[in-house]
Image (tube, rainbow over all chains, first blue to last red):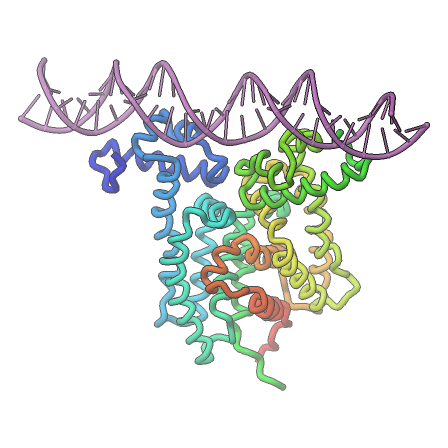
Length: 207
Length: 207
DNA sequence: CTTCGATTTGACCACCCGGTAAAATTCACG
DNA sequence: CGTGAATTTTACCGGGTGGTCAAATCGAAG
């Protein structure tokens, strides 16, 4: 069946293979653009065999989304309220940029989902994601209010980190076309450090 | 036929109605998720009648893309090499944010297209868009090198403007969920001015 | 009011896609 | 090996989708 804990090694292997193939296909074609045939083919299985492991296309997509959440939220989770504020935020940004670099499919899958109005991810966004963001926004607000970083809008600061980093995964084609095919990440990392650094700077003393 | 210049007023009116409906549907469901039936229904026409004005789904999507390009590139086009650098860049950012606010469907249509690897927009990106970006990047580079703004990477600065502003249209659902339903744009505008201002600032003199 | 091209419609089709049923095969274990 | 459960395959649907076609209707110019 499609029970959560895989009972046999065959099930463990095949579920993993399918999830990998589905990530690939969902990320590159979107939910409606992806076909079970193509996912099955990518996974090296027949379509009915795929449906033996996942009840439906919906269920498969949902399973991926669940698997992804931990990976996706890890960088923000790791932001330490006890750490040095500027370093914590820069580190968060770097971790998110690494995510774009090393997990672009996950980023695009998410982007696809949100773009369509989050028909399947809405519960996760309203629950887990929102509460984590609110929690960390409070941390950032405290840092800002005690003058350890410049004055920032915590929520919009987080949005900015998302936007700036995920852009390199989601709009990869555009970025690479404009950059002429060279790997954009080294320059992107230096640039984003520069941007975040400037934003977190304490205000210049009035002359 | 599907000739470019509409011959009759009926043609002009119906083509416009169809393009409007198609923008709505393509933006909210993606290319493959959109159906001709739904577009026709939204436009108040029958499907064969729609296909009387546009040869195919592809052709319709392409027509929208072409129509969109001017609107889409206008803010960057308006960036004036003779203007005051800081003001020009801030103005560009504001115009792009207005685009997200007032034309979110256009933004999402583009995002969808790029996410899927730009199967239909590639020529436009490689041509018109790239050359415009390169041209304006050179302008920004000159401003930076003559010390009229802080040291910036022109291409990545432009990417950042895109990322930061389009995020509010493309990830609207997520943003509004986290912000609790209040209009995010006023705060976003203030925040982005703050961010861009900080980035363009000339470096603090070494003590 | 006629006429002819422009527009609209209804009927239709071939294909694709998600999903099912049941038989066939493979696997683990005694 | 034998056996029952787990896995895989073959054959098949029903609905939806992009697109066609010929007939019907409309509209403007004479």
